[in-house]
Amino acid sequence: MKQKCTYHPTDTAHWYCEKCNKALCPQCVDAREMGGYHQGEKLHMCPNCNIPLQWMGVENIIDPFWKRMPQFFLYPFSIRPLILMIGLSFLSSFLMIPGIIGLLSTLAVWGVTFKYAYAILQSTASGGLTAPKLNTQTLSENIGPVIKQIGLYVAIFFSAGIVFAKLGLVVGGLFLFFAMLFLPAMIILLVTTESLLQAINPMMFVTLASRIGWGYLLMVFFYTILGGAPALLGQHVIQYLPPVVQVFLFTLVKIYYTFITYHLMGYVILQYHQNIGYRVDVEDFKDETSEKESIITASDDTESRILKRIHQLIKDGDHKGAIAVIEREMGSLRIKDPTLSLRYFTLLKLTGEKERQLVHGRNHLRILVHENKKTEAIDAYLECVSLDTGFSPAAIVLFKLGAWFNETGRSKEAIGVFNKLIKAYPADPLVPKSYFHAAQIFNDRLLNPQKAKMILNGLLSKYPGHDIIPFVERYMRGLSQTIG
Image (tube, rainbow, N blue to C red):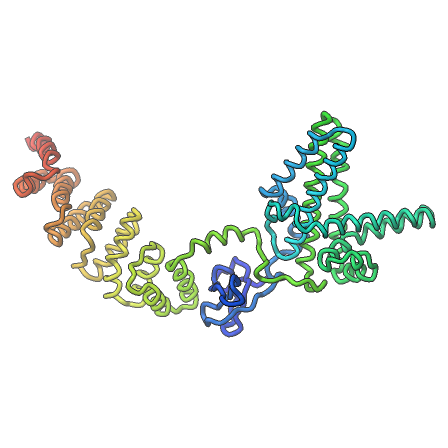
């Protein structure tokens, strides 16, 4: 059974710390770039103990291949193999001409197909569950393994021909049956040893199949079905289509099932790598989420790392330790991330640090107002006022809070916030607007036009040249008609 992350119970653990006895997923681990001779490599450290972690290995990360069959069928539809499949199929259909040119084009199509299929197998066997890159290096360089694989097929069928000729149909049929039975084992040996001689050595491929066990027979079962699928489609569906379409679809289907088959064989190597003595390194392992994780890693910043660390400390119940991490890591920097700000605000509340909560409350409210988080801002403000009735954040924060209190029908609280702004920041440019909003609330919400008129008259006399005066005058004309 797979071991899950201590801090993210739904995520599979990749690493284990012997000192604190915790299993960690990739997002919980501190990955540090190494220098010197190990430049480019990463050292994975425990965030709790600051010591190197042990990789838990492929067996704790991946599912058995029989549980991943839907993913095998979806694999060729990722962007790289899909482009190659369609391109080669178009090429095959448009160069469908008799003679040497048609033969050479067919050889080219299948040469490229098997080169990329072999790259899929090698990549998957090493832990790369995403499709290999589609470039010149992948398609043209190091064609030796592909030639050896062709040699493997030639050796099998040449030997089968000799057996049929010398020993008859029955023995020849049995030879061909066992050759097809152990063909996946031969291909796996070719990948793991890069030796054609070892791949066709019965002692080697029979031993390898026995090490894998019943899983090998299940793989051969799927391998046989995948191998026969193109022929069935061709016989029952594709043959009734126009010739050019026939060639295109039949080529597409054959390439599709070839990619699935090689991905399956590579995955079997990955799953049973310990049984067959094939090494898989942690740096080579890349699952389906690796590209997304790389984006997250690339965009990782100080606040993101702090969030990850304090999440672990909160899970461990160490609230003061989480506060210490935030204050140590941020230093004199002002927190900008709303999630980190909320965590810090809440931690200060939980630990009874009222003074520090009020100090951070001003910055926390500034962040919430900037993010337009109305409900969260109102709640945080009321929390701070409950600790200190004289609490006063920045003028712009009070101005926004007054408007939001009014929007939510809390008119008296809105008046109180605008009054606080006027008293705390009498010279601020927002004061005239605060007077005007307060007058509107008295008239529209609290049904007290006399109070509204008094505030507006004071506003006209105190700020005669302000930009808001035309609006005030227009509002007062309507107010006078109402008062009558």
